[in-house]
Length: 331
Image: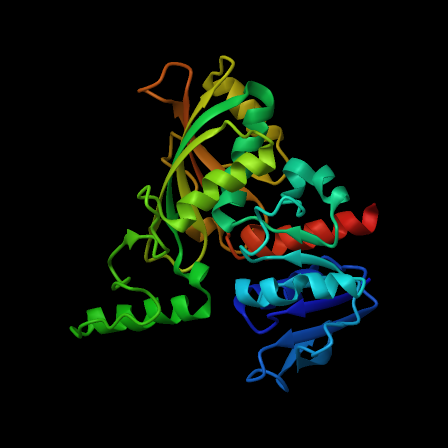
C-alpha cells in the first residue's frame, strides 16, 4: 500500500510511524503531511529520512491509505476529497464517527463493519476504545444493558502541549511558583478536573457524549444505557476507567474473568493477594488493554465492577488505526 500520514508531526502521527515500522507494515511508499509551519521538517522511518510536506491544494495525496490525525477541521474539509482520489481514509478525529456513511471500528470488536466503507473509516475516541476492549467480550457473553464509567484521562490526550504543561506546572509547584494554565483551563499539576470539553444542555460534556454514542454504534446496541464522568488527571500517558456494568444474563466473577482472559488484546492484571491491578505506568507503551479489579457490583445483583487502563496514544489511537489498515490489506 501507498501510505500517507496527515498530522505526521503530532503525538499520534509519531506513534503511527513507530508502529508501521515495528509491525513491518506492507507499504510501498510513505508520505508525511502537516501544517505549513511544519513543512520541510524530516522524520526518520525504517532508516530513511522522510520530508514533511504541506497538504496539496488538489487533494491528491498519492496514497492508497491515509491516516488522518491533524484535527477535526482538517478532516471535515478534506477527508472525502482524499477518498475521491482513491484513498481509504482512516480518520482519527471526531469529524465522521457518528456519520451513518462511515464505519466506526475497533478491529477486535467489529472488524466486519469496515467492509462497508465508502472511502472513510473512523477511529473511535480513545476512551471508547479502551472501555470496549473490556466491555465488548462481556457484551458478547452476557448481553450488556447498562454501563456507568468514570475516566481518569492522561494529559497526553491533549497532545504534546498537555505533556509539556504537566511537566512545567509540576516544576512550578515544587519550586513554590503559581502554575499558569495555557493548554488546560485549570492547573493540572497535583490537581484533577472535569474533562475540558464543551458541556451540553444535559450537563454531559463532549467526551462523555462520545463514549455513550460511539459505544452504541460500535456494539450495534442503540438502547445501551451509558453514563460517563470524564476527568483529566496529572498522569503523562494511558487513560484509566472505572466501570460498573449491568447485563441481560447472569454473570459471576469467575465467568467474567474467563471471558476476559480469552479476549484478544486484553491482559488480566488482577492479583488481590499483592494488591496489583492495572496502572497507567504499566499500560504506557503496551498494545494490550489491562483489566482488573474484577468484582461483583455490591450495589447491583448480577452486576460487575472492573478497572481498565490503556495507552490512549497507542491502542486508543495509532495502533487501532494501523490494525484497521492491516484488515483492509487482508481483505
